[in-house]
Image (cartoon, rainbow, N blue to C red; front, side):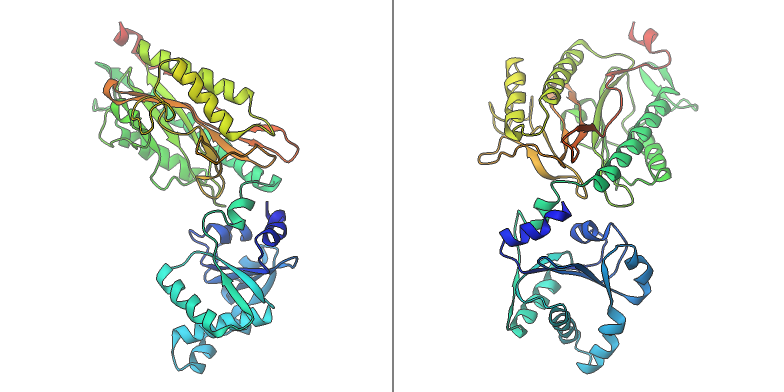
Length: 416
């Protein structure tokens, strides 16, 4: 949580931090500013000091919504004045700007640098800046930074964002299901009013319209795959594939709300009816899903939950990543991952050597067991996003039926 930053800075021997870059695609900036749209902003903080936002004049109203202490960049560090001072040398002007910010904000000692910008330009800027500094050391963190650790636990305000994203996502999934069901079936193919096949592309077009209507964005990445394509976990589905009865559909949807928070859920559907081997696989995936959720509580080992899943699925005859590393059949991935401002963040439900983390208040994680058989043209996955709030209570962020079989018009007669 943000409240952990001072502790994490001390543990990582950081005296101050600086976050740079536009807000677009800049997860750390968005984390600190609440997703407010900003250009060329800086966020600075001394350990045990306030958070300060240095912003452009045109964004002063937006900046005020962050609740931070504010410094108007155009008043205090006017770029036209700096460019004139340095004879049009943009690098020199930018270095001067950063030097003044570091001096005025008293960012001495080890200064952690975060954010997102063009890597080549940033590399050049920071190298030149470091050469001009005498009492400040610029520090980069790789892998587990103070922010990746802080973001693993969400406060109640973040949980509220995630709950609302989940509610809206489930609403859209329900609309997609109803959209499919309103169509007729001919020769086991779902058809539109003109008699042509309803395709994956048609479904995704409808879904994207409904997501936009409720303020969500899927960035074109939603998985809606049928048959053999559903047996490759991240196959997003071919747009021209017609919807057919009895074929597995993996519908994995992970949209982002306007504040940048993701939801992530998966349902496996068979339109009209399910073949017996698919029903059996689905029943097994649902059984281990339920077992995991019965053990999902504060203090539970993330690694133990993954190993429990391997134990169960291996007992049912499925290869797993433990019994057959690199397998393309059976259980081919880990059990789940954290979500928040990134679709994949910590903690992870994995068996990786050296990784284990007890579940704690503030964790928001997906649980997604699945089995996949490309040669038999089916895949099955069930995924919910769940959270443990600050009081240690389990909260379901996904609230949608798990039904495998989705009834269709004329489906019964088609299956006979």
